[in-house]
Length: 120
Length: 115
Image (cartoon, rainbow over all chains, first blue to last red; front, top):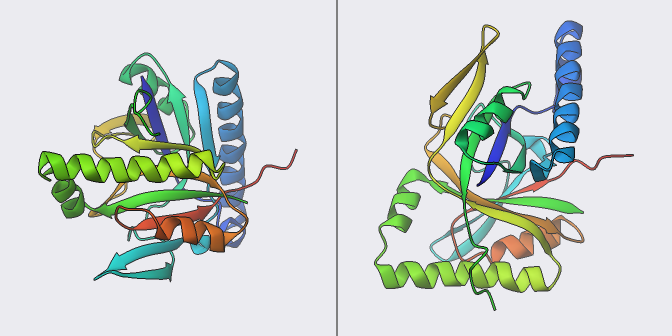
C-alpha cells in the first residue's frame, strides 16, 4: 500500500527564534534527515520533498472563469506543511510505525492507485 | 527548478466533487488524467499522487506519540493531491497550474539539497 506522510512545521524564520529553540529545531531537522536516509535505504520511502517556507508559496485559483495568482498558501491555518514522503508499506500500521519515528507531527494519507489508468 | 503543486479546495468543493453525477465525475477525472499525462510526457511532471480522504495524524504530546483520526491542519480546506514538477522557473510552474482542470493550486518551491 502506498501512503503519503505530510510533515508539519517549517524551518522558515528559525533564525528569529531563541537559541535554545533553534538548537532543538536543528536537532530535529538532523533527525529527519536520518529518518529519510534510513527508510529510503530500506526501500520504504519511494519519494519525497522538503518545501520552502510558506512565504515562498503562491496560489492559482479561478473565480467566475478568471484565473488569479496570489502570494501565500490557499490553506489558511497556523500549521504549515514543511514537506512530505511517499512510502510503500504493508498497511496503515506500518505507516503509523514510521510516522512515530519522525521527530514531529505527521499526517498520513492513503493514496489512490492510478497505476492501471490509461493516460494515453 | 523543482516545485510542488498542491491541489487544494474547501471541504465543500471536495464534497461537490465526490457527489458529481458519474459521467461528469469520469469526465473530470479524465481531464485531470490528461493534464498529468501530457505534462509527464513533456518531462515536466516527475511525480505526484492523488490522496484519499481518510486521514490519520501522529503527533507528539508530552513525549508520547498520540494517534488520532483526521488531519492535524485545522482548517476547512483540504489537499486532494499533488504533482512534483520540474519547471524552468516560477512563471512556468504558474502556467502549468493555470491549466489544471480542477480547483485552486498552491505552488511551492522545493528545498534543494546540497551534497
